[in-house]
Structure formats: C-alpha cells, structure tokens
Amino acid sequence: MSSCVSVKNNRSSRTAAIHFRPIVGGLVLSFACALVGCGTGSDPGGTTGSAGTTGSAGTTGSAGTTGSAGTTGSAGTTGSAGTTGSAGTTGSAGTTGSAGTTGAAGTTGSAGSSGSGGSSAGTGGRGGTAGGAAGATGMAGRGGAAGTGTAGGAGTGTAGTGGGAGGATGRSAGCGKTPTIPSSMYNNGTTIPITAANRQRRYILNVPANYDNSKPYKLIIAWHQLDGNDKQMYANGYYHLLNLSGNNAIFVAPNGEKNNTPCTGNGNGESGCGWPDASGSNLALGDAVVAQIEENFCIDTNRIFATGWSYGGSMSYRTACSRPLGGTAAWGVRAVAVYSGAQLSGNCTPTRPVAYYASHGDNDSVLNYDGGVTLARNFATANGCTWATPTKVTSGNHICTNIAGCMTGQPVRFCSFDGDHTPDPRDPNQSTSWQYQVVWDWFNSF
Image (cartoon, rainbow, N blue to C red; front, side):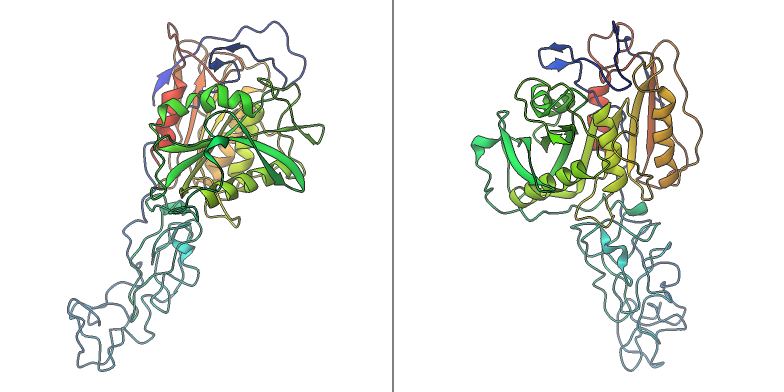
C-alpha cells in the first residue's frame, strides 16, 4: 500500500447532492481531477501462452521437435505434440488433429480442434495478433486472430489473463493513414462536431506534437464533472495528465448534456452540464468519438482508458461497465480512474473485468464515501478479487489499498484521503496533489 493525504476542501454551501461550483485558478481547476492509483502489472499474454493442459504433448505424440513422420501414424492418445517428434504416416497431429480435447478458449487457454485458438479463441485481444490461448476467462478482448498452428498445434499468440490482452498492441484503422481531421482542429481547444444518437454533439482533441501514424498511441477519455465542459478539460490538461504523458497518448474530452439537451456553452464550464445516461445517449457519444479517433489516428485499441471526477467519475464507471475491453461493443476500456464517484449515469452492474482505480475523501459532503467504496466492490467482484473493505483514512496521509486475489492484469485499487469532494487531494504540507503522477503511472502500467 502507498499512503498519502489531502487538504480538505472548504465549501461554504451545497445546493444538491451532486452540485458544486468550480474554482478556477490557472490550469489547476477545482474541477481538475488528479486521477489516482498506480497499477503494478501489465496485462500479460496468458499464463504460459501454451495450448492448455489438455492440449499438451503426449507421451508418444506427433509433431515434436523434428516434425517428421513416425511409424505409429498418430500423435499419441491426446493428439498433441509428442516428445518423439513423429507425426504418423499421414503427418497428422493426433486422432482429431486438434491440440486439445475441448477446442475452446477455456480456463486453461487450450487450443481448438483445428489447431486454431479455440472455437472462439477469446479472439486474442482486440487488434492483437495470432493467439492460440485464451485467458483465465476464455476471452481476451476483441479483434485478435485465432491461432495459426497447423496439424493440431496451438496458436502462436496468447491472450491476456482475464481478458485484457494488455501484452499485445492493437492497431486501429488510422494506423498508416493521414488524418482527415485537419490539424487546425486539435491541440488548441477547438471543438469538433460529431453526431451521436441522432444529435449534434462535440468534443475537444489533443494529439502528440510529434505524432507518428505508424505508432499506436494510448487513448484517454476525460469525462468532465457537473457544471464543467470540454473547454474546462482542455484548460486543465485533461485532469493534469497531458503534461505527464510525454507525447505518448491522445486525449479527448467529450461535452456533456443537461435537461436531455447537448451542452453548447463556450465558457470555462457550464452550469448544469453533466452525464445523465439512462437512455445511453452519452455512451453513444463515447462510441462515436472513439470510432472517429480510431479511423483518423493510430490508436492502441488494447489501451483505451477513461477518467473523471464526480459526475465524470460516474460516467467513467458507466464506460467501464458497459464498454469493457473484450466485450461485445466495437471498443472497450482497459482501465479507468474514478475520482469521488457515484452511480449517476444509468444503472449498470459490471460482469467483465476492467482494471479499476478509485479515490474518495472521508469527509465527502457531495457524494457519499461509502458509495464510492461500493463501486470499487462491484468491480472487485467482476475482477475475481477477494473483497475486504479498504482502509479508511480519518487524518494524515492518504492510504491506497490494493484488493487481493484479483485476476492477473485486472487489479482493483482504492485510495482513501482525508478531505471533502475534490479531484485534487493533497497530503499535509503538499503544494500540489499527489494524484496526478499516481494516475498516470496507473494507466501507463497496462
């Protein structure tokens, strides 16, 4: 565990459970969020990348080290690669020609009956290369190819444990292309129009100054808080992550809605602008933005992240729940960072793992501390963790708890700090928040 603390926010009044007023100061805004939490692990490619326990080598099997034909005509009782390297008179790899009895990308990551990565192969990770083995949940994201092995051999690639495929690099359609979005439309706070759910919406975009269309970049979605907007996210550097990214990430800030109408204000924030999403209109906005960015720029489709504070934290939770990497949608997030969040953007209970980081103040007077803990527990369940309530700070430095027993590559981390409703908690005597670097390290670890 790491520990830290933040200075409490002093607030004169609050008018609603999720309403707060921004205090702007330079680029560091009160709505600016410092994401918290650093992860420790990457999303590796399966346990061993092998064909599983049932698809392993038999005692007399075929297609061994030499791959030459043997005298027995088969590859052993299991049909997998043997130690003698013989493949039978037909050169086949076993009685079924498969690398395992199940042929599915099951819990052992076994290969399929045709020597591919299983009947669904967990698809090897979205945008990933060949993958004969699936992860612990039998899925590894979206878009990967099945195994390439022949004669019952397992595929050459592996899937990420728990479905992340984080060890593989995905490549979007924009790789190798010249963007059709003109350079005058990004890196300067200009709003980009886009249609989502039959309504005109907008977002702001930042691309590395040294952008290379052959290099896949992380994509980070910054959802603003209530009374915020895309302009504010641009002004504060996307929760202060832009300056830490080292030109290794692309950032987008979608713009919210109020009273079921898209927000249109051009100031630094807009009263009432947030992310109510019972109808899914804001999730549709995320879909449209990601699709447009992937089409125009080279994105690592296995490393898309979301973050936000308060209402933006709620929308980040909704994104992780409804758009997990390896889900049924065209894209998914690998990890999220939620600051002082609650479930305000439609109801959703996560069923697929997403690496989850959260922070919350012990004296939060806007969104209840225990509610933030509950959101973390929901993902701990989805991530196969052994839940124990994180340590709650009442004074001093913040404390971050790593929940035990989670799937490899799918951690859950909760940071408690002594303070009110803020994305910028500080430990005693800190002049800036501890969260900025912690959150960037969290995203950068996957």
